[in-house]
Length: 229
Ligand SMILES: Cc1cc2nc3c(=O)[nH]c(=O)nc-3n(C[C@H](O)[C@H](O)[C@H](O)COP(=O)(O)O)c2cc1C
Image 1 (cartoon, helix red, strand yellow):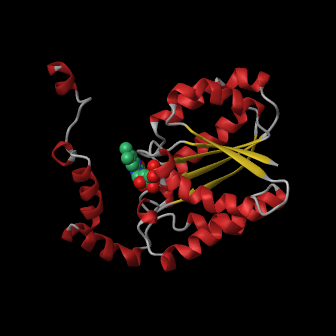
Image 2: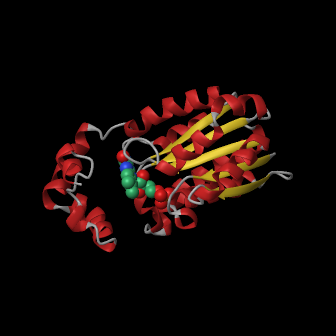
């Protein structure tokens, strides 16, 4: 089977999405005859060409980071480029699977977009082979190998089994998905992290890195701001 990957992270080749995909694909390509090609949706000028590739593909994986409980704009733009009803007519019947990974650990955040993706697969007349949900992804590239070994191993096994059976292993999906919400016993620790500023430390560092820290409370679409502009 040839799997066509669309990576929807604005970070492209440096993305956490790519890191998770790599482990999945290492497992997937263990089966002789399996191969993949990857495309980056940050290349927005290529969306129309990518839509053609989508239509002709045997199996597709759309992978992206969760952005404000949904998806990056480039992913939505690509989906619109697929023009679902037309794709349904022009496209080969195919399997489509999704990977959605988020910064915060609670899987509940991904549930709304998950429903959207199930419906999207139907509208594209594709068979939905499943949705891989992974929370707590932001720091993945900074974590030491002994911390990531288990999760990367799970992605590898998931890809390996998918490569053999064309199905995502339900038990592995459950393990990768992790917790729906923080359990009650963790909440005091979470509040403590919030109070001490530890929770925001990483995100604030990212804002500073991008010269956006002083803009963090901006409301560009608030009616009063729009009036001024
Ligand atoms: C604009 C923006 C919105 C985000 N919204 C969420 C969110 O709603 N929930 C969450 O858990 N993480 C959110 N994140 C964090 C990303 O999902 C997370 O950092 C992800 O691992 C980035 O993956 P990438 O490197 O593949 O782009 C957001 C990040 C950005 C930049």
